[in-house]
Structure formats: structure tokens, C-alpha cells
Length: 599
Image 1 (tube, rainbow, N blue to C red):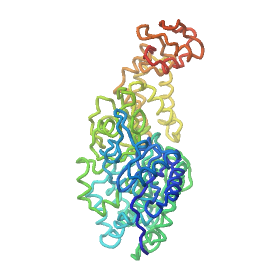
Image 2 (cartoon, one colour):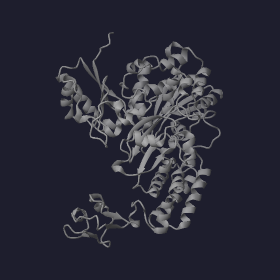
Image 3 (cartoon, rainbow, N blue to C red):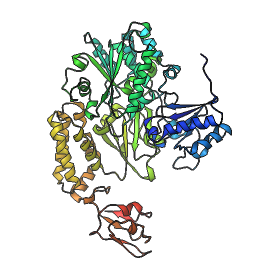
Image 4 (cartoon, helix red, strand yellow):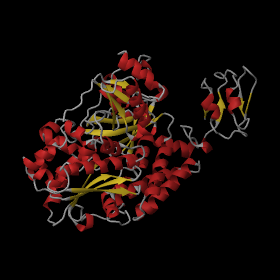
């Protein structure tokens, strides 16, 4: 069959973020306009997975010219098609414009967000339709599987992964090859292989995006891993809140099975491997591997004590191996290109790249992949474009609710497993939440402890009771009722929970409190001793006033106040009646002259 050739491809992002902003309608509109202009034999429209720059969606990239269009609307498409495809000039209205510049940047790789990244796991990002196996194969997909099944032995597969230095990307950073060896060496008539896609960290969507954009890479990695450890059955445990990822991985399983790349007698080699998708109910604790396995078995998702470890006694009491989505997606390229190539990326102890979701108080939010060892400053300022409104960077939360807050003084910290741990944080699955000068760090600690209290399985006392007591202490401090001894009690309790909780999630749960105490203790002291919230977040601890030297008497704050607490004549400095003021903050938000002060 002859392959149809097109001179141009319009790659429309069809990841969850862009789809929620109408990307599928944008794709349909492109197709209609191209047909209307009789260009259907020259221009092909392709729906891709997540292209990374989520904050700018809906996104389309025109290839081969690498022209990046962003924040598209239906109304833009007719003129864009006219200008770009008929008149041969890129459509400036929908180009990316940096915050600090008025000049649009046409090409994707000239945009700071993209130019500093290194794509390994996301190598197929934005260049293929994830729902078509032929396109994955066209980009060398399943070549590594063919090599693993026909040219090298299971021991050699593990050796390549060991040589590469791949470590688990789900949070713990345990050496992947060592994990595989432990499962391989445990005798059992049945062995299971599991992909953990139960991504529950607030602000994290790395695994979801990989499953949506490149599901066959995950399947190929799992099948190679199954051959290495001797497993014939696999499970992908994915949270039910990811319907697009669920649909695409199920479709990928059907296609791979039809092509003889999954199921019975794969590629005629006699090796069998089948994969089922299990949909999780959204419990954060099921991201912990023993709780996840209990959920697959139909039990309540609660962790169990270890040993025995899953490699010895896992799913249904059989030797089991579990890695997360990103880890599995690394495997095909390691086997294909070799461990020697992969270990040249990253640092001495942390090899390869890492995918992060960059969110929070940042100009360029989205999905990024960077080499291990990159400095936080490069991620936040070069890729992320810095802090909106020219505000100061204050901290970044790394590793989700069980991670830690890294302050501005550590902006030059290399991002790898060892350095993050030294700083009191963890790599986690890869969430980076950026905070600016207006963030209250006591509030951050309370937010994450609240989340963990709600999500705790309650099996062990340190979490069931200890986290609740931490929450109560933090609430007491934020109300202005705290005593100085409460800070010491909070620190001691956090340290006790860290040492005594049953599972890894419990052991790391106090990290937000411990790191905010370590780097921002002065904010706790201000809440307790001075009865003030320096960031102006907690109403009981703040008061509003108006700087008479800055106030122009424009009256905007007066009109915005819902309780008429502001008075003053036109063009004269205004005042706030503190007896009437409800501390809603409307006056501060609307003032253009920064005359409203938070005390």
C-alpha cells in the first residue's frame, strides 16, 4: 500500500489540558477549513498527545517549519489557514510572545520553554497520533522489543538497564535493574508485572501525559521488563480520573495484540505477555505499591509492612515487580540505544532525564523534561520564564504532598535524588509547585497536611493520630492562638511520624512541615510571637491600611469595598475603618498604586 504524502502537517495538541480548552473543536475546524480551501491533499491535521506548554493551549505546531501557534480559537482558524497555507506567511496573531517582549517568536525551538529541555521519555511528544500504532512503529517503536526477544537474553536486558543506571521515577529512586533482579531470582510458577499510574499528587500530571501521548512506549517497556523477569501477566493501575489516558492505553493494548506485539507468542518467539487495565478509585495511598496491589486484588487499598517485599511476595502472594509510567517509558530507548548511551545523561548517581509538571506562580506552566542535575534556577527562570508580575521567587515544593519546600537560597541546587534529599525534599514523581513572595509558608504546610489527613488510610497510629494533631497545631498557629512551644512540639511530632509510620507515604508526610520549619521558621515565629502573617494570608493576623503618600484619592478602593469601610474625598487620601473592615482584600486587589498595605 502506497503511503500518502503531505507537504505540511498541523499537529494539534489533544492532551487533556488542551482538550478541556476545546482542542478537538479546533482540530475539526482546521480540517473543515483545509477542505474548504482544497488543501486536503497537501495538508494533514493530526491530533497528538500533550505537547508540554499546557498554559498556552489549545496549541498547534505546523511542520516541517516548526511554527508554534497557541491559545487558538475557532475564529482564528480560517484566517490562519488563509495566511499560512495559501499566502505562505505565518499568522502572527497566534504566535507566542514572551512577557518581557512584544516581538512574537514563530518557531517552537526558539521559545525558551522548549529550547532548554532534553527529550528522552517525551521523545515522541507532539510528533505523532498516539491512537495509531503505525505512527509509533514509524518512529522505531517496538524495535527494542524485537531486539529483547530475538537478539539478547533476559540477563542481558537487565545488564543494559543496570549499565544505564536507571532509577525508579515514582519517587523512591530505587535502582530499576536491581528491582528486576530481585523479582527474577525469586522462584515462582507465576510472576506479575505492574505499571503504577496512580498519580495522586496535587499539580502532578506527568504519568497521565505520557500515557496519553505515547502509550505504546509504556507497553513496549513493560513487555521488555516482563521478558527480563519471567512474567507473563501485567497490570496497568491507572486512576479513574484519567479517562483519556485510560481510553488510549486500552486502545494501544488492542492494537499491539492485533499486531502480535502483545499477547500470545509475541513476534513468533513463544513468549506470552498479556496486560489488563485496572482503574483506581482515586485514593492517594494507592500510589504506595503494597496498597496498590491490595487494590488490584479487590481489597481495601492499605499498605502492609515489609518485608516480605513485593519481589518475594506481592500480588496474590506471587513475586511481583512494580514501576511507574515514566520508568517503563525509559526502557525501550535504553535497550535500543544501549546503557552506555543513557548513562552519559545526568549526574554520577542520577542518570538520564526527569519529567516534571511545572505549576504554581510561574509564567510558563506545563510539562518539561530536563537532564538530571539541572539547576532549579534554570527550570524556574529559563524554562519557566520566572515569576508573574515581576515578583520574587520564594520557594518550590518538590515531590508532592510528601515532598519539601526548597527556598530561594537554594536556587542553584542541582536537581537529582541525592541533592533534593539533602535539602529535605524528595524527587517524588516529579511535581514542582512554584511559590512567590505572597505565599505564606505556614499556609503551605497546613494545605499539604490537610490533604494527607484526608487521604491517609488510617492503618497506623502515626498517620491516623499524628497527622491530625499536626493539623490542629498548624490551625492553632494560623488563628493567632499559637504559643512558642507549639513550634517545638510540631517539629518533634513531625520527626516522630517520619521515623515510625508504616509505609513510605507516612514516612515522608511530615516533609512539608519539616522543610518550612527548616527554611522559614521566622514565619512560624511571626505567627506565634508577633501575631502577624507576613504574607498577609490569614485574616485574624492581618490588618489593612492606606499609605497616604501613595493614595491618589481615585476612589476605586472605596467603590470596591463591600461593607463601606473606606472613606475619603475625591483626590484626597482615603482611610479604612478597622471596626467595619472584614479583611476581604478587595481594596488591595483593585488599587493600581500599591497604596493599600497589609500589616
